[in-house]
Image (cartoon, helix red, strand yellow):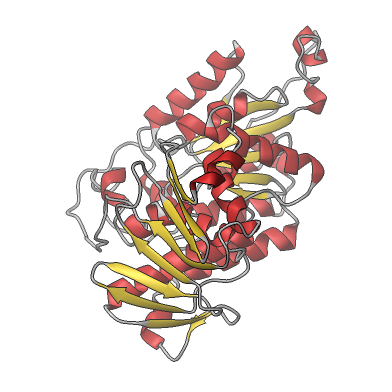
Length: 422
């Protein structure tokens, strides 16, 4: 992203200029001192939320359920969501202290915020993550981390450069049935891993590039259209764009079924196979599915209808196999392996949120770090490119480019609209 208003100034100076001075309390409450059982205010992780759509409505409360978190600000370009998010935070804490912003740069300029939840539309994830890192804050960023391959690499490198903690919202890495399946592979109990299956989403099977007719643009307080678009190419406002059911398949904003569930299921396959530092090297189109191969011969199949529930995966080895999904249903062969399963507790997102908070404090890498998230979504993007071209593509995971394929390489990146940059 390009230089923004306020760059070159301290974040505190930015707040003074915006009239955002924070008054210190003259009376120190029992809550601030921690006598209510919570850590004292000085020991809490102060957070903000950027984007309050479907994902944030579940994940933000999970953060607020943690005693060592204080949510103090929210940001959304849609007025109704901004109001709902602010009310949700204030109702949880029983006060009116939560500040609401339209522009994420104003939230990120605050000195008192340590970390943020990024839950915008897919096409904003990479840009928001890089802005957050440059603002000196850690982040829990919803999946997929990018809508192009080059974006993901930029995020991974930015996290290294600024030494930020990045947790991708691929929470199944901290969900018991998926952990059980991966552990069977890691312990060699399925023998040598030969084939991994990743389910794609049943919705948005086709991606598209559609320019809709112009409609009257709403007032900025209702929807800031320029900020909604962010780094995506400019187009006149149409209310249909802002619907997830539309933008979820539009190539300017998302990657359709392959990235919607593949960001979870391919990620689980990569995790089980211990390939967080690479991606498959060749992708074939087989009917409506994509089959890919890693350098060592392991086969990855991206397909539909694997399990009984959503986001199913199947791992096949020389001595057995396992199939798991969101429903908690597990099929495993040999069946004797079921005895090795330990049941998890709590709502699935909570453990992933806790893992991020623990990483914030310890500065260790979380369960779903930027590099691993980038490598798994790269496989999804490459599968999409294979499908769109209708032919085989070959990928070099070291150089991170398609081999001798100029057309495919052009699809691996997108131009950013000014003033935004990675």
